[in-house]
Amino acid sequence: MQRKIAANWQHHLLSAIIRGHFMISPELALGLGTQIDSILNSSQLYSKELMALDNINIMAYEDDEEHEADEIGNEGAKVIVLPVKGTMLKYGTLCSYGMDEIAYYTKYFAAKENVSALVLDIDSGGGAVNAVPPMLEAIDFVKSIGKPIVAHCDAACSAAYWTASACDYIFANNDVSSVFGSIGVMLSFIDMVPYYEAMGAKFHEVYAQQSTEKNLAFQNLLKGEYDQIKEEMLNPLAIKFQNAVKMNRPKLNLEIPGILSGSTYQGSKSVEAGLADRIGTLTDAINYASVMAWEKSN
Image (cartoon, rainbow, N blue to C red; front, side):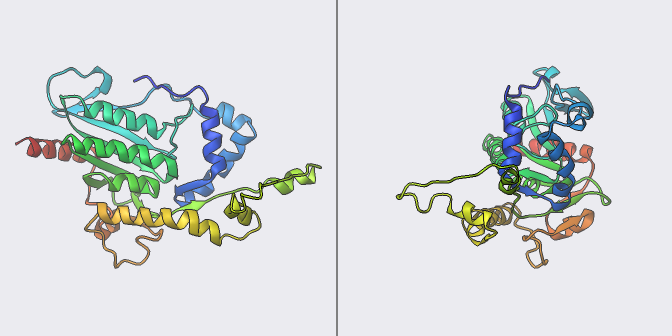
């Protein structure tokens, strides 16, 4: 299935990195350091070692048969499987799917009469904050037309977990590597001013007398004073995240320390905590979604 990425995808990627506004597991954030440095400095690691994605791998399943989603006919009741993998960014890049792409195809296939249910195949430690709303909108659309949408997850942390929690049911792929949680928000920011000042640059910021509060939280951030940006930006978003998970997952065990403040849980522990419903393969998730669709229609 052909991808349609924006011509200025490089700008979107750099914008997401520089904003630094993420819902992402810390181990993934640390691991991205080398990649981010390579992108910003246009190194050979980025230009030669990363494989371009020229299509979106969306599959359709009917009676245990697998088909390319864009080749399905108009007969039968198909379950569509869409990938949500890697670092979640709103816009697609040359080497990663954007959540606006996945959200578009989620709604596109959900609207087809012969598609009975959808499965999000999630393996992600999270990503940019603005990658979440397109997926939540798409999931709401699927539900609004009366079709089931199931999450099948290996890793579903932070932004990826918010997405999974909005689905009707959550499968943990296995009891070894599957990990859930990391419910929280972080801001990652590199202050480049000292670097450029060391090379002779001089920065000036001048505000109108009527603009005394403009960028004040950001100015305090540069001074190492983080309270205002926590209060105005991070805390409200973290509370919204927590409330969404509590609403989406009524069986969540809120007595477990750290469950809403960033802890992660693996395999069966995720099920015990209420972050997932059961352990099962992708085939299990597809079959479950198919049964849900049958029950809704009968």
